[in-house]
Amino acid sequence: MPQRRSHVSSSVEQSELAEALAALRAQIEAPVEFPPEAIAEAEAASAPTPELDLRDVPFVTLDPLGSKDLDQAFHLERTGSGFQVRYAIADVPGFVKAGGALDAQARQRGQTLYLADGNIPLHPPVLSEGRASLLPDADRPALVWTFSLDADGAKTDFRLERALIRSRAQLDYISAQASVDRDADPHLALLREIGELRRAQEAERGGASLNLPDEEVVLRDDGSYDIERRRPLPIEDWNAQLSLMTGMAAAELMIDGKIGVLRTMPQPDERAFERFRRQTEALGRPWTTGRYGEYLRALDTADPLTLPVLEAAASLFRGAGYITFDGVLPGGDLSQAAIGAPYAHATAPLRRLVDRWSLAICLAAAQGDPAPQWARDSLAELPALMQESAQRASRLDADTINRVEAALLQPFVGQTIDATVIELRGEDRAAVQIAEPAVTATAPVPAGTAPGSTLPLRVVEVDVAEGTIEFR
Image (cartoon, rainbow, N blue to C red):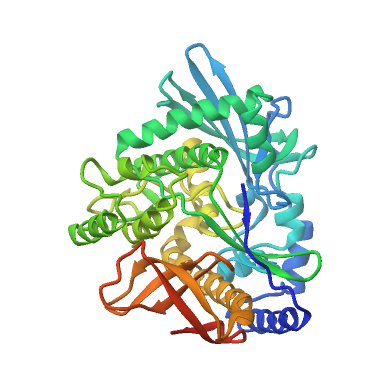
């Protein structure tokens, strides 16, 4: 369940923070408003009418509460000793035409950016939250992956088709998890069963999931701000397993066709593993045997030291990128190390640029057709476009949280506050976690300080406009 942090409450603090966040929005090096021609194109856009009609299949969507840009819908059923999974993806390749104003805007943006007071979408909301979104009780064209799984959850066959679907319900994680816990929904119970089987498949592949708590700035109805930090619910992981399975199938199609774009991440080197081992020993939760994925899966979520261990493990999940190919497969290992298999981004085309290319190439391959020429011509541009947008999103997330955390600590200037050391950063600095108000920051620490230890810090100065905090 969500754990709400202390919030910025006084009118002076709220005003100062609102000004800082508005200034941050103005500094974003990306288009914010859509030009009239892009909006007009979005309002007039229409995807091809599919020949396959799956509106009798009761698809549902599962997303954070209040989401409107619904990329995926699923339907699950038991088939003998195995299962059938239908996973429908919004038909963005059908709506967005290459070379148009929408396409140009999407390439500049790369992905949807999320701010404290809203978002800067990849596509105009009339498309991303309306005509292309898999909203309930609305007929929508979609790209539908159909998977056959055996009794162990292993994929035995799959296909990809363009189809007309109609979602029956828009579910959110919290209420859906409550329904699973009460055994109130057989369809969600099947999601749990398949999700757990796919987690076991991930373990066999040597994959590793890093389920760090989500950290999000939330604007309250009274105008104050919170930073909400919560652990992902089990149902989020089960749902993610459907997306991961789809991404691996997309990679398989593109590798077989020798054209596509893969999401890659190298295996951590021995130096990174050794550093992580030392950190787990310092925290009293030593990793001594087995693969690191097995170790992470075995951590007790109720253990207060699990969070510092997961924070330390984040250093193992670095170096992700994209690789493209056309005609000749690139040399070396094509796997995404955390997944343990080749993988492609192909399930979030409303919010991420690269997925449109993946889906268009995969659909052509599934139909026995050559890849669209527009996708082939622009394929090599994707890694740089996605890297730029990822860096922009990362900076925006960090800058937003830094400003809210500075505002949270403003009333504590001159006071001493206890903090737990999460990770050492050099000989005399560390990432620390403050419990109340719950803030993560970098602070000076005495020589010899160990991760997991608690020490008092004096809040010397904060600058909300810059998002900086000075401790002693």
